[in-house]
Each structure stands twice: as C-alpha cells, then as structure tokens.
Image (cartoon, rainbow, N blue to C red; front, side, top):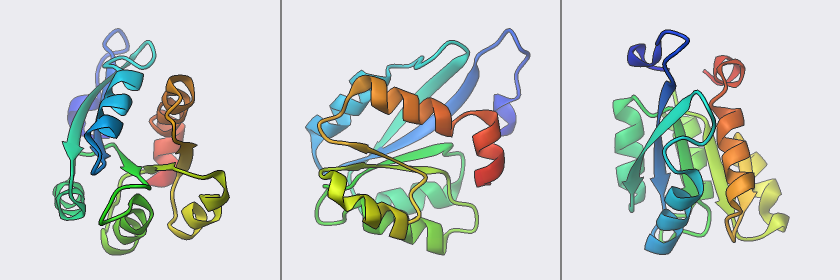
Length: 143
C-alpha cells in the first residue's frame, strides 16, 4: 500500500485498482459490482486499461494495489498478462483474473494469479475476492 493509504483508524483505507478488459461491458460490470466502497473502511478508485501494454506500463509505474484482469480479453488475454506481470515486474500488484470457464483455473495457477472469479461477474463473489486481496494480511504476504 502506498504512503497515502496510512490513515488514522477512523479514515477509510484507500486502494487503487487497475481493471483490464477489451470489452467495455466487462469494465462496466466490474465498476458496478465494486462501487467505490466495497466494504466499510475500504475506499477504492478504479483505473481502466484496454490494452496489455497499458496494463504493463501502469503497473510498472507503481501505485496499483490490485490488478483485475479479464481472462477473456483479446488480443492480449488476462492470464498471459498476469504471467507477464508476475515474471517481469520487480513488485507486481496482487492479480485477480476473471475467467470464462471454471476449467481454466489451472491456467490461473500457471499464471500466478492471486485469485480467480468467473464470468458472468457475480458482484458478491468479486467484492469478496477484492476485499480479501486488499486485506492488510494478504498484502503483507503478496508483496
């Protein structure tokens, strides 16, 4: 977490999420499912990326607390992009991948994804995964 996220206990923790998809509807579903306060005490801001190059560049800049990648995006899929982030960046953020098929979960393991949810996006499932990945104990083990 960045320095600005060290706030007094009465202030919400802030997190920046980078959401990647080539499908504008998938981006909107993630935005709608999470909102700006997925749980009390946590405020999120969402940045969007529609290209794999944009994701790599933005994560390399730093300040991204969680990357949410669409495994069904084209031409660069979220699974390959996750693997690239984990292999090439010195300090990649935790990554949640949205898969089209449960049978592709083994690919998420290969890609070193920190969590997986399925299309169609279920707001409760996505929110639960995001909150879990952004918890201080999870962040301490992924960084």
